[in-house]
Length: 289
Image 1 (tube, rainbow, N blue to C red):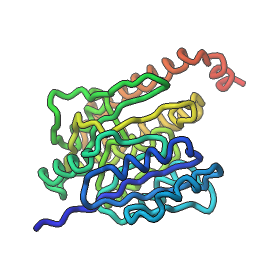
Image 2 (image 1 turned 120 degrees about the vertical axis):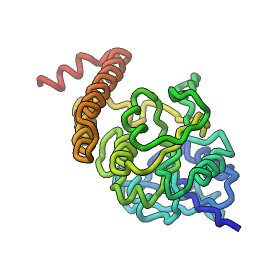
Image 3 (image 1 turned 60 degrees about the vertical axis):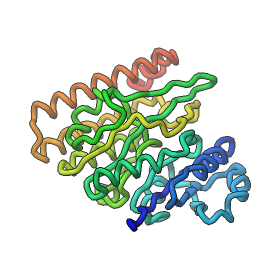
Image 4 (image 1 turned 90 degrees about the vertical axis):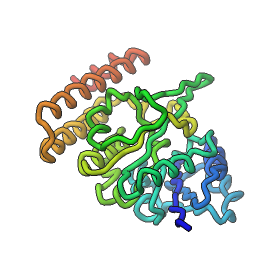
């Protein structure tokens, strides 16, 4: 009988008492047979710890609380490096939740079918919820599920137009070897997976229309920041990926096209956010004063 690979659902959280129980309950509902759930509390000062007491005695759950707040990205790293040894991991932020109880078992089925040693990660999709509105973000792919090269994933990332951290089940050892969550930027997740692909051109990625759950957007989301400094730091990491891709022997013109396209899409989405929130004046002040 083949051994069932272990999977860890990592739930990093900080002052998310209003959401955390729903996240944990949705993780517990996953029907995969070899699972653990690690809650990484980054020193919450609200009643998160008290609310989680109902889960503490569950053998599937480990609750870890950092002695002091170390920040979102550092907490991602600590959870990945120190709080689990599972060969496969998935990140579910404390304000998000799964709706598909079969997501992990379906992802692992696809990974094992394609060969666990060959796959870097499996990426599904999620529903975005803001207020009373919900939207399903589907990738621009023709089939329900496709195993592609990591090179394909990288160079067609913006064409595919879909990324979901909470829907990505990935190889923990490969992530550690590629220094996942190395920089405290907005898109540390996207950067980490793209870098993983550039550094592992002999590996493959599974992209799927399989829905994991709900990414709950609210005003406290890190991605909602309009600080131009934060976004410039974010963009700098995209240029590092361009340099890395060339160093790895990829076609220079193809790399340049990727950088130009990423810059255009990034700038467009950023300024669209500014227009929506009417904060153009504030950004100008940041630039010149």
